[in-house]
Structures are given as structure tokens and as C-alpha cells.
Amino acid sequence: MVGVDNTQDYSIKIYNRWGRKVYEGTNALAHWDGGNSKAGTYFYELIYTDICSDEKKLVTGYVTLFK
Image (cartoon, rainbow, N blue to C red):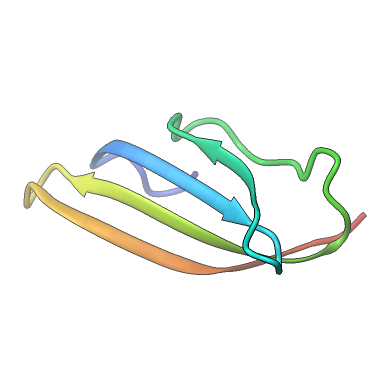
């Protein structure tokens, strides 16, 4: 993931439109390629610690998977 140089304790979860978790990861250099998931819009929740401020941050948003 871009911009993770100043982070630690990285955790990302991706959910389908029904709220079912389809991916979970703790490696900032790994990526989700959609696997067996169908094309559509997915919600993500990214939690990390900013090492400059020692503050835990939450970032949420949507990603669209095309196949």
C-alpha cells in the first residue's frame, strides 16, 4: 500500500456489500486481488499506528472490483 512508510500495527479488513469479511491482512506490502470474490463494490477498514505521532488511525472507504 502506498504511503505506509511511517506506520506500524497495520491491519486491513475488506467486506462485501452484505457485511461479510472477504479479506483480512496485517502486511502493508501485501495486496488484495479479489480472489474468488465477484465484481462489485467493497468496503474497507484500515487501522494503523502513525509512528510520528504514535496515534492510532482509522481510514475507511470503498473499492470497486472489476473482473
